Length: 250
Image (tube, rainbow, N blue to C red; front, side, top):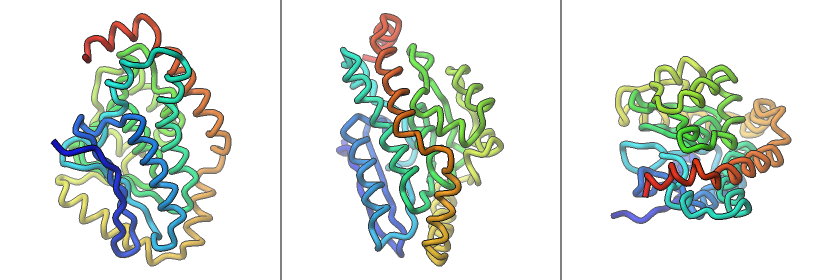
């Protein structure tokens, strides 16, 4: 079994940030912290002009939060710290002065949808169905909600948040504005991501930085907002309802 990792590889001025966890690329706290730091470091690295966010293996982009860690949360402070992990990654992408391109090769759930929504330009395969499953376990997509709502609107976000049992197709996500393009194969996706990212590297980096600032205008309060949302999730995860639900995942 491959060990979890976050790694950065620079090819032709493009910084490829890849994360992996053997449990369907779910993200425990330590991996989230490393991912946030890697994104911040890449944003400050003069050798990188554009960033690509991807995950390892072929099937699942990201299964969201680590249920193993969720089950072991026993107080609100710990809960807030755990859910702040996704907040920190979202804020790292928001503050990064470089465009972040999402490469979504497969299904993505919960926090993973938030990561995809926080990229500046997101490309996927037809296998990249999305689901917000948080309500199923008695919490909600509070931390990732602002990022998802920013991309697909309140109507789209509330639809998938309330319908917590259903996967929505990659084509649906494209129609709503989460994905820009959907490809039939991972190979076609990778080729398109490479070509697009390297083409962006030929543009004026200062112009792209200024454009990104404009695109994210109105999110300046997200450090506080997402921390508040993490506290809500940290409280709800302690409820009897959620504790009982999580027992089924042991």
